[in-house]
Amino acid sequence: MSRPTGEARRRPSRPEAVDAAEAIVARRARNSEERLPDPDDLLGVVRYVANHHDPRLVDAEVIRADVAGVATIVAFLAGEVDRLHLAVLEAGLEDGGMNYSGLAAAEGLPGRQHAHDLVLRLTAAAAGGVKRGQLVRAGRRSAAAERTELERHAVRLRALAEALVRRRDRLPDDLGDAAGVDVDDWCGEVAGLERGTALPHLVVVELRLVVGELSAREGLDAELGAIVVDGAQLLAVADL
Image (cartoon, rainbow, N blue to C red; front, side):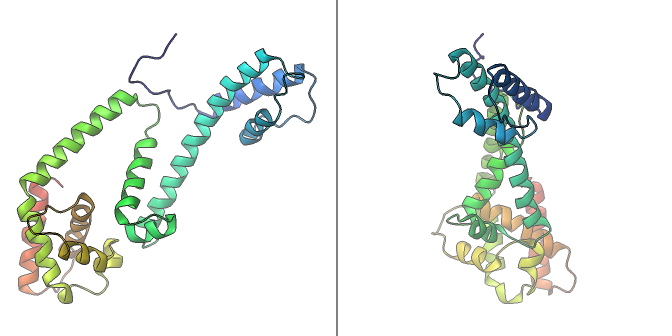
């Protein structure tokens, strides 16, 4: 039976992947093959099938069944890799004092936006088992709502960012480490925007982190403190 359009294959669980591996090994044992991999070694089973498919030694029916089994195993392994990759990146951001510029450098990506996009992609991939159509529609609704808010408050958001950039020398020295933002890169990007251009999504994300960290600080001068208070209110109203 064909899969309905718009649905993704449900991500297999480890027991399902191991069951598939055990079935592969059992088929190959009945084929009198030797030195078979341990079914718990999922990657080893995939490697074995990839390297042992000589039609003179293995029936086409066995190969076809193995292909289906390997598909289950690989889908599970791919999900595990995405989940672990995301966990490591989040550890870098949350516990390692890294920012998106640092992630970009570690991943060999061109810039902060690419690193941010990678985290978003892995976050979506971690939602395995969700129908693709549902995920796409939910993502579109969320993205559309966010774009609406960004457009509605674009002028005020840019004014807030520029107000902070103009006061760069009055921002705390440890702001970048505490907020997880490369403040110099962020300020440079804001300062380099063409007149009338809205802030890019990542710049707004980092603006929220900067304002959130500044809101928790004591000892800001009165002018900077007022800007931060107004900024926090704007971001709350805009739900960004």
